[in-house]
Length: 98
Image (cartoon, rainbow, N blue to C red; front, side, top):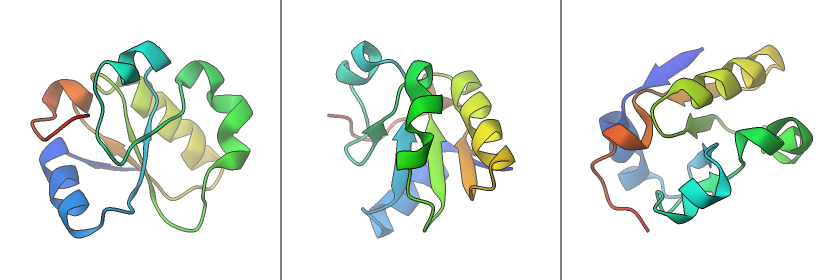
């Protein structure tokens, strides 16, 4: 499974605003501030929503610090998804949030 830093993610988002970014934090955490392009799929609901994810391009997964996104990424990887975990999560994100 691939990993990138939040700095690398920010660079990618500047060149591709349609990047497939999944934020696995819970809804209240997501509501408190998130990356504009992120779609919220809480880890607590992840298994039930995995079939709704777009397999046509890589999925970037982020959480608060990196633990939950690593678990979600490992799960997606085991299902054959092209997945990239974002190391450090939102705690390391220095870009804009909404």
